[in-house]
Length: 222
Image (cartoon, rainbow, N blue to C red; front, side):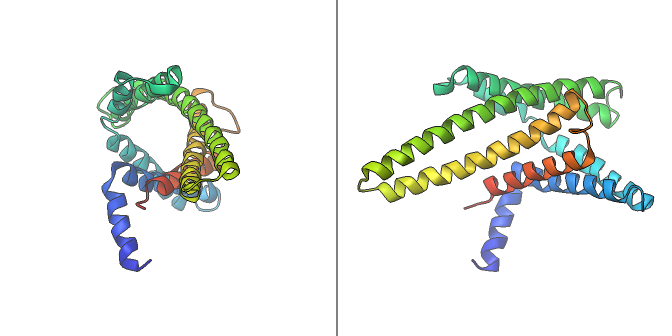
């Protein structure tokens, strides 16, 4: 692949809302880890990293304006083969993004600051519920794909190689989605039920980067 091809793909990637979100999410969690690493040895640098983290986090919330409509749209459509799983996943996502608006507005001073914690809790709860059901659906599809692949390899057929390749590509994408959702679930739990493991800067930093980089992979133009 030439450098021009890579640049073209980067331009397309960054033109997407999800592309920008994953880039800024990378900034957010790299700066979180930088703040943790420099906190004791270089307070000045740690303060700058913290400012970067805060700015990136607030920027991501602004970019997500109206994102709750995706979940709402999913709810108003037929849930398909997953039924209740799809309904609960989309409902959780809708709650997450809707209340995230109020978290953002309270943190930038438009709404009262005391609302931030409450809105963040509701948003994180919806987010976590959504992730649980999205993970479940992806795991079901991965299992189904494995069965289908074994059947194709056993029985053969004219388009066997093409179908197997398609199944494997879908599995990789679903594994990336699962990794991202599990990582984001850890971050959500840190908001809902603070604990030493989930709330540690390293846990949050690594989880955020896993989610961001899985998103890079999934959204990168083919």
